Length: 431
Image (cartoon, one colour):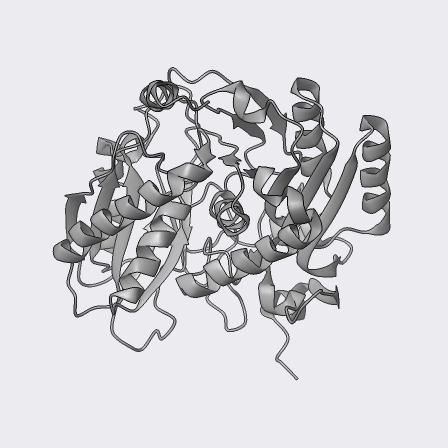
């Protein structure tokens, strides 16, 4: 029998497995974490997402593929016409994995970044989140102008409210008959399932759910008050030796989307794969090949760094993958707790984009699983809007990581210009 997790021992916060269509189990997919938030004090920390925990890219892709297989099994012949929507920020990479696995016609993820020259197609709210607004910024509304099934992907479903809000927002723009909500874990209670059925009846559409595992979250009374009363965690550790920082620019074609923020079409896949190979060539030539690597994406930029991490492992470099986040979580260096180390840093985009939120950003763990072994090189992959003076400034991410003794290679990818992408798509007769 496994040792109880620290959050379970200390507060009684527990995750229970109920069912699964395959070998996955809730307690192996997520671990109980905490955040000092009176709205929602618990956090389900995924072991296969590559967000808070450095994860083998094969495990991340494997989980996405298994979830995609469940979606394909449900949609059958309608799979390749489907549109897939991933939720920012945690599921932007997972959604792309699902879309790639099923060969979806189009993939789009919601975003919290305001992009110049990119009209907002739709938006919805996430009630319990630290950052509530989701924007949809496709290059063309035509990407949604069909009656194909819409697959909404999130890392975990607690109540299903965010998915329902998104479905309602999109249904107002273009009604369709079928929606599928796909997640790594589904922790809804019966009252939440009833709310989903009611929404489906109201819209005159079907709303199905698939997940790798379903379970139940045990929330003890007074949890929010107890966690909020905890002393502030120790963040931004320092070392006797300051690490080194180096910088490299990775090549990326202007007509290949760097992810799903403005829509990723099925026929973008081959050129995306080619671009990953070229970017990996430059990255490999720029780093210390004798050291393992932790590839760190920036917030919503998840799929591209994940694929870089995968490519490094194929070329013989031990690699793990994770990303930064806007989500503040409680850090404690205790065995059995998933958030052992934490960094808080100034938002790098704030100067480059006047609408950006000024609240601090966060990174957790950023350590090789074998903490006594060789220190990994941190490969920080950012897009151009995040490559600002604030990234390098005192209190920026590069500063806090090198102060902790970490050696950092910052790899910048040119971000997708939606106007250029739109023009290239129109030239090729694509939406």
